[in-house]
Length: 303
Image 1 (tube, rainbow, N blue to C red):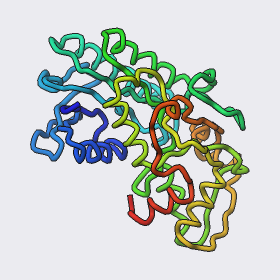
Image 2: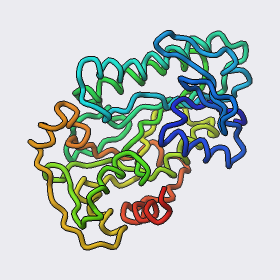
Image 3: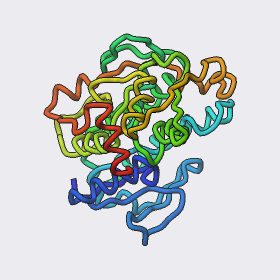
């Protein structure tokens, strides 16, 4: 797969993945709200609200990696925000499906994104790709997200779906927020800290997308998570380990989280013990399967 276009390419994962694939010989372009063809990764313009896209964007493209979607935890879930979260995922996929249908030569692969939020709040239950879907808004948005990917698969394009877990990076996402209090030798976890987070090192999720891109046998749904989910409290302790600090780890009561975040609190209070069962049936090898060592590597390299 030589020519790859990425939606959501300027986000935390998208930018890291762009560099990761470029270093492995891929020509990377982006789809963006603003055209910038002189950027390191040239960006073609698309407008999801108007269902429009630069006609040049998909010319000579071997594969599409579709990461685009408004950040689920950026602001409280009002009705308007929920619609924005849905539209940024579903309408964007529908636009890509429409434009791919118009291509005289279709991409060989479309790597679709989803999230482990599809399983909902499941406590200590071990969840694989064959597990039932859960309840709640996150589960519903993921269900519709994956359903929209069928619009591309039905055109005969290979369409693996990656259910992304909690991507760990010091530059953004959950880890960057959790680490903020550690310079003061205080760490925190949410509720009783026993809820499972299906985490993954940012370089391992990039490696997974690369495999989905290049391995023609990958056609199904895959949990993009490390083999051993960790509890919220274990993640807090891993940060302390990585920074070689003796920190006080204190809980943030669940009622306070719900008061501050409303319905969006399920992002941090839900428990999802998802494992990459389907992925482990392939020859994929994790570079960072151990939580403590993974977090230490992220801090050591500041990535």
